[in-house]
Length: 283
Image 1: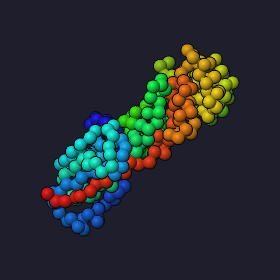
Image 2: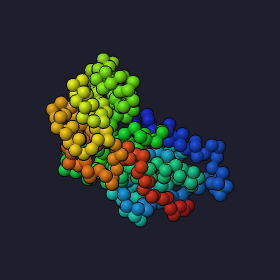
Image 3: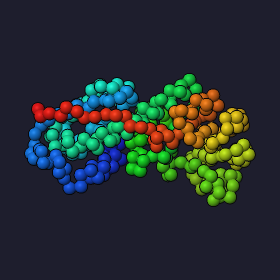
């Protein structure tokens, strides 16, 4: 996540998180540290995983005080080990104390997503299938969570509702059917937009293909039906399978031959990676 992306998209979200944690003052810190004193604190990894979000972590402290210095001993996407010192933060002790929790919240959440994503992506190695995230993200955390998926080896599905057309069951119901939904989308959308539609059985699939859908999402279908669907779509449309995909059950989907597997679990069920700021001292 580069400086331009941070300034254009992330800074205001980080500031909102800081305002949530400090409405007027950090009364605890101000009681024990009433004036400036330089200090430093170590960033320690407390379990094995994949690190993601280092620049977001750093940005928290810089937004509180641009003079803060942060040094990392690893980069996003690296494997980190329990007990490893992965960074050092130097600056006003009041800033180190006040920014600690917000900075760790971002880094732990993003690293947890990257770690979980890497575990599933590794199971798909050697296949043509790409692992996708979804819009099942934490409100106001999407830019961070989708970035973490990429760091972990996954790919981003559409970013938001303005980013792509995905006709799901309720859209089909509103339109009056599969064919109607696809045709209405073709009529409304710019020609450069691909049209994806969710189907639940082979009859819906055939109707979607006849209507000219570009991508077919196979939702909660049996493995046998998905294999048949991939054969029917060959040369006509790309395929994506979805429906409660997790690290525990993704292995059953590896040999189906779909182009994409999407998993909401990447962002809504990944546990955090335990990290800590320790050994704060004056310098």
